[in-house]
Amino acid sequence: MSNTPTPNEIDLQQAAEGMVLAAALLDAHGGVLLPQDATLTAATLASLRRRGV
Image (cartoon, rainbow, N blue to C red):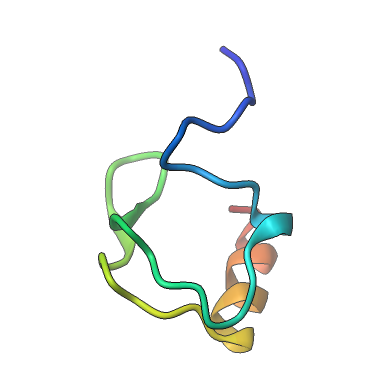
């Protein structure tokens, strides 16, 4: 499986505070980590990085 992001994906390193999700952010099991239209905050990005997302 490739690690190349699909059109609806970006690498977490490219994510920035203030970006708004076009779709829900899901974990590997399909659970919702963040809902569609969520605005990324510094705290949210730090949490995702700690989780290894």
